[in-house]
Length: 172
Image (cartoon, rainbow, N blue to C red):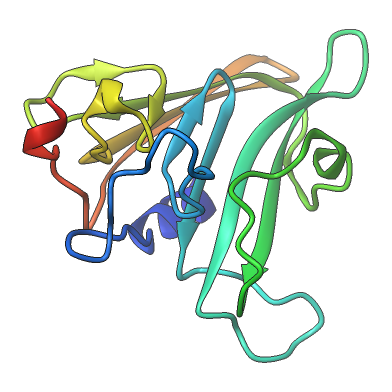
């Protein structure tokens, strides 16, 4: 949870005038904030270069669950440097198989809740969507349950994002 909280406190969110509402035929925003069932993706200044080197300006970070056995799941962290024109909008499912490292084993559940400016809770979020008026969440709560030898171990944290994009008025 500490790694996830650190990444979220380093989130990168383009705001106006740098951010423009996408046209219908535009590619998705490479810096969008995306939360789906058991998956969280965003761009942050907390990229960790593997094998040394100079850290990138930003990195695309994703957390997701992957089934490893009949009843076992692991929490994975993908971190891809974004330099120059290399700005993927989302990791491909093929790339998911290469995600490293495993953060937690024996994960019973991984849930993410996003909160808007009014404090409403959402279990999914896409800042590239008119459904959210192109805003990003104000805060994120992460719940994680691990299966231990003496039963289920629950963990939870909430992070108020240091920056967020407000709803875009004409998108309402």
